[in-house]
Length: 81
Image (cartoon, rainbow, N blue to C red; front, top):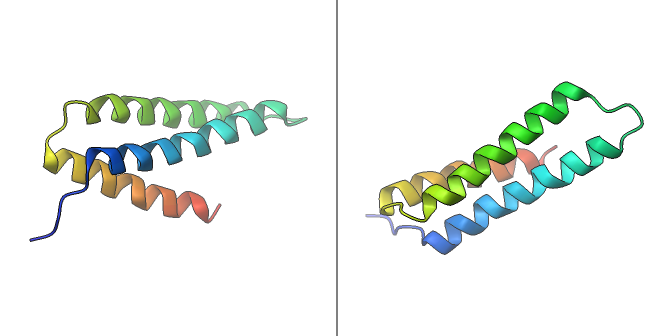
């Protein structure tokens, strides 16, 4: 049986991904030729992060683990961009 991820650790993973999106939004807004579709997508993804942070407040261990796993994978994907 694997150990569950703490809510705090899951929250940090979500926050790390949120920070990446917030940084990309600022960069896109400052770009000489911003791409509206990219900006819209980034803002939508940031909203998903915010919703998941709220969900963590009342999440049980299985949901915390699922959110943590999703954001750990997302963080790795974004690290390659």
